[in-house]
Amino acid sequence: MGMKTIVMIVVCATAYMACTKMETGGINYFGDGQLYYWFDTNGKYLRENSLLYEVEQTGYNNNPDNPKTIAENGYSPVNCCITDSAIIPIDADMPDERLYSHP
Image (cartoon, rainbow, N blue to C red; front, side, top):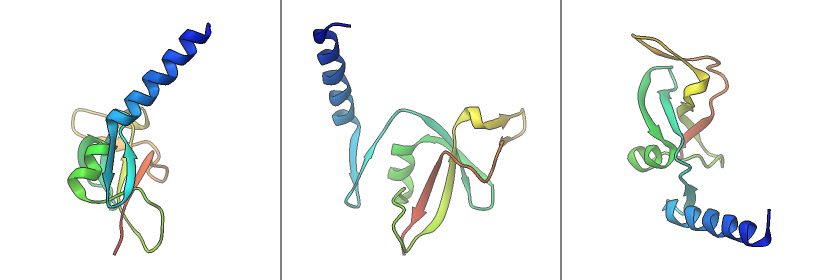
């Protein structure tokens, strides 16, 4: 790989991150385009959404600072069993993303 290729990759990655940056509540989020299946803390399926749009729609965030309360868990499709009637996380204790409310 030549120097021009490496520079081009860095420029494209930086531009992508700048385009997908969103500020919510003073915390910066980067939307990676990954879709997650979102569940409430009782395991009830809510919706399919990206991290960026879930934060925007719910007002929750993935900032782990205390005080916090887990509000939603997000699982990538590869970590879910998808049937005709349900979407079930394979390992409910290990979500790919967690969103918190901060009282």
